[in-house]
Image 1 (cartoon, rainbow, N blue to C red):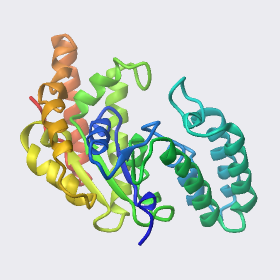
Image 2: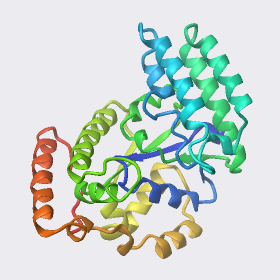
Image 3: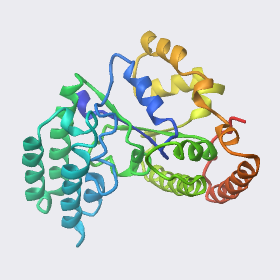
Length: 291
């Protein structure tokens, strides 16, 4: 039987869609632990290891691998005081494993990618005492199909949320779009990319979960679906945390109406309706509304 470290769960979404809630929920199951940092980023982040592996054998392959290494060193190693790969490993270690990766990438890109990812994630797992881990990098959703070569036994959970609430949430953060309409356009683009990635995955790899179902309308069944998808036994600890912490009020459904004046809210609703029409034309399911 493969090590539990080789059977991870990747949770993702459009950003501000509820992936953190699902990661925290799984972290309260005794058999799985949320990574520290909870978003490792370097596997599925833009120009990360998964992207480089997808370009292996192409003229741009080596440059993609070099860019992935550059981003590990300069962006994902130390993102903030307590956020980054530096919390569980030294920079010297990272330089060593990334140097080995680059030296082997053109010879055997899959083995080079696996060796690098497994080495780094072993350190991350050791740092948080994880036998099996869950990562909540949002890009896991739109890179779901690129994970299988690296982790053949992995699972993915994609969390969806009303795009109006996603967008309203983004404008209050110090990252991502600060304009609600730019955020809505980003939500639509990410929904499309996620759908394309999911459709390329093998059956049974991806569970798509509506945040409104999980938090409000179908709590018990949603929780059971998560457990079943991740091949986890029921857990009283996990359920107790879920019932105590994950509340309908905490989902802030309909915040897009409360956070903006009436004319802006009407414009958001119109913009969103047009986005949803385009998504439906592509066969993409629209998340439930909390209104």
